[in-house]
Length: 492
Image (cartoon, rainbow, N blue to C red; front, side, top):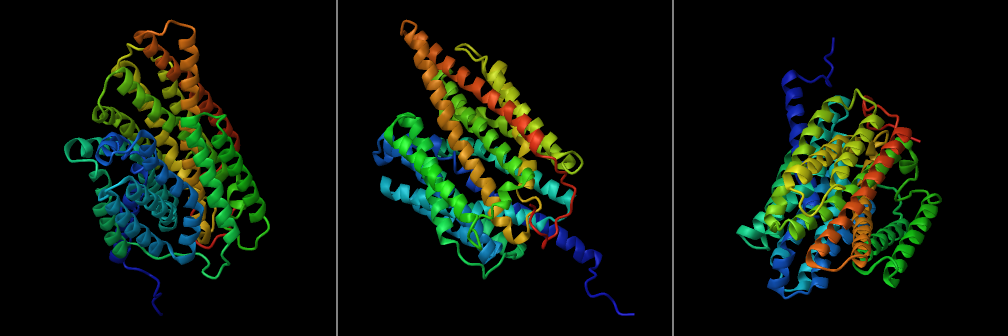
């Protein structure tokens, strides 16, 4: 009787298992850099302004250049990964990210720094969807996939908090250039690991390139994210804000119409039309609205009202990251046994409870009594839903399209973050102005007005998160206990 050549010995099986988990470590490190680079530079902006003689408006472009390139190119990056192979795309993205970070750290003027940040964003737009799709294709077994996405949930949820702390430490004890330099050794380390532990996987190499879809998606997302950014600084009625938001909406509508007609679309519409994947994308948009709004408002409160330094503010967010870690680990063990909609709704409700705690802020609120419990609850909420949402992002998607499905998930994160900062900041500013208009404008009244604005904004955020919990309970009915078939048909 012939031996089946496909049968593996126990030792080779164990080696393969170890290789998968090393692959997870490598992809998680790549994703961590993308996530914490959204916030790591924020703490260093004052130092950058002084060193390069940059105005406040110029400093904002250090942030905007990264987010615009990242958000605008995500769908293109996801499709490139599907086309050329995910291991190859991951290595290209890491190498490019390392080079752009080194250039940024060595910048001698604002133009050089902004160009480097745009380069980070562009390579990040290839890196993020590639990392997520690699996790989805590396772990076909539901139980292992649950644990893998628990790790990814920690990275996605806690990475922004890590960025705040790391940015504060590097700026305080070294200098601002290290908030950029730090990416280079990390990216190269991940690239070396990827060469040895990642397996290649790819989609259809001969599919036609959807040039029209790529241009429309990139231009539409850039316009939309930029419009929300100008709303924060110039107001919602400013001509630039209105024109950018309108342009973004029109371009994305044309993009949808185009994708419904072309034979090889950049984004097959069935990916977002699937009720469970669509519910996951919606849930992540909403939780990002709350989370990034919370980062903005709590950071302002701690520094403006409570008198914290930038480093102390970063450290104050560590309990948030701890909450993400604890919840992600616990959810990773049960997500294949509990309906996904229940877990997503539970996460949104925990986050809503945390935002609800912030509605009680006043000028004399202490960190331990009011802010700390809120941060822990929001962290637990994000940690509960992030692994589930990331897992659902590629649920019933054929392996050849997992890159673009992952890109939609990352795009939902960026859109949610942009909306959260713009909308909640506007609500806070408007409420503060109305409060001060009705009272004598003294120093204590000004602080009280600022805090009042924060509480009104967090009240709105609480309502948004609670409404999202109801929506995902209705939409999401999947259970994540189905083994992934690499060549399965996409869900309808």
